[in-house]
Image (tube, rainbow, N blue to C red; front, top):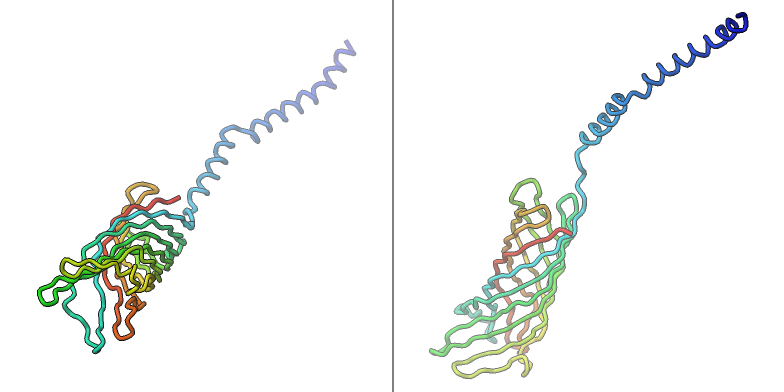
Length: 238
């Protein structure tokens, strides 16, 4: 009996200690508390607004081009009777959009140019086609649903073909080297973009074409490309 009582006396503190440890364990590692901690962490993370990041965007568009020339003859007179040629253009581009709204754009494509006028009841017209590339800088306002933007892009163009028609006669003016096969200038492009889906947007753009190179080979005459175009395209964020 004495041994039995001694065992009880020694085991009682151990049992009390174990009971206290289990109680503390239940308080410290309660599953509800763990859920509260996780929920608190998530709440803190959700309360931080997402930071804007730079985006890479691919663009595709087609356009209607209203092309003409700035022509000055050997007497210094500007030809005012030139009619615009209504032509087409297509292009593909890459835009790198920064978080502050500034973007860099690179575009390449083909476009038609030219003009026409009537001289002594004879129609004189030019039909020209270029392949051009341009690199520019712009800014887009991202706060609204419709996002307006503006960019200025110096361009370089290579003449693919050029024909002049005088009445019923046609002349290959690229082949006979009466005009320069290269041109450079600036595209000035206001536009607006609207999101269609998470990564896809529709955009409309006006482009003013300001040719800065005299493409006329004659030393006494000057000829500069002029015009404007309306573009409709899709942009894809990648």
